[in-house]
Length: 563
Image 1: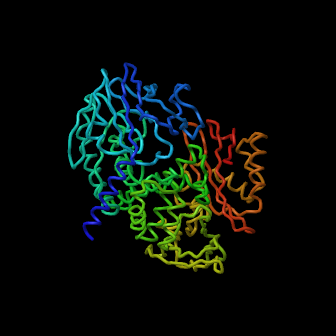
Image 2: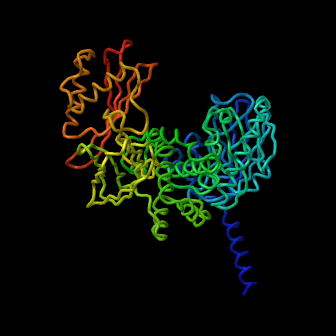
Image 3: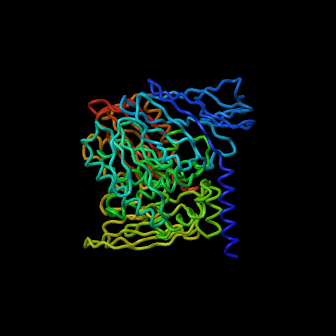
């Protein structure tokens, strides 16, 4: 029986190798750093192929079918080879090196996500080829491996081969320190997701975001000089498991979101939770008013929305899940181990897997909750939930003796409001550890003897400059209908008055529950966020606006509200 099992395994491996697509091409790097490619095909070949849309093929040799995103599909029949040029964008490179950013060979449409054997023959009078080497080409790849060429030196430490340009060797020590971070991150992720081979590492001043591809990570050299290098280094290492070098998820923001979440967990494991306080605060500030993961369903996301999903919303969504359920990272690991051999998955597949394991799915339809504080009697505050779901919400409490404690309140469809006696309490903060991703954090704080709407948020107190505080409070009082007009000490043109009036009318049936104000001196811009609760629908919305002020800060010269 054992002999039969061994034979069957060998048979499967042989069948896999036999069925695996092979791509053969000669690639010449010319004096302008462009690629002159000859891709060679088998005899009697007839199939549909995908090429990058910037590659032009001879219409006599390849019949165009349609565009697919940044690719073009062609039918190729009885052609022994195709010659084409791949133009390199050299604006972000210099003469010392070349790093390609386009797929430079065609791939059979049906095998696009499958691993392939690449037989590539490079020639260049201008550069030495660093990647892919002959040994690198013994590996299989889903797409044509990125080309790295130039005057590079290298060192080997902690199992990584690290390349750097000759003219950047002054930063060698910083690179070696970064290498220690790579090794630590690799070991941290391996503990959950299993061992993998270590990719080659390249540092280059390519003015691009760092990127992980198959068997290769290219770091922008600026990474080693930045404040958040632990995050960037560990983010790219996470892509060895989730990304082009590991499990490819159809929804790209989900891939990035998981990698960023894993990076956050690694940083916490090395430096403690306090290290991420500022980063978490900044992300949540930018996410004010986000109500759900609905954008994850959109196939045509604009760049701004995609980045926000990838590096703010999804990482914070996963981070809050981890805080509520410390086993979440292990649940993610179980998903990876089941899907890794397939190399590709999707949100739909992930949720099907989670359902079979009775794990909370990644819902794109469910709305985030909001919890906010309001004074409901002289000795009590009310904590209100706007959600139908059940939640256990922690409160951070500072009593009249400045002693800190935690209290947990339960909310449900039937219990949407809880009262707290405040006779011996100085301060209350809703969900101090950020365990629940909320629509807004503008209304999470109550402090005795401080009822300013701008001091209820989790970000920063009202600007200490009197003129900025005065304008902010005047706008808040006007929009919340506490005042019928803005003070005549502030000059507002008819156009801006009408815009402010429209914003006031749009929120006339809502209660302002919190706000935040910040001022950018260099362009005289006042940024105001306000949280409103609609008592009829119990829905929380966030109004984001920018007021352009004159140099003396006595006039509002422009009003812009985010739609």
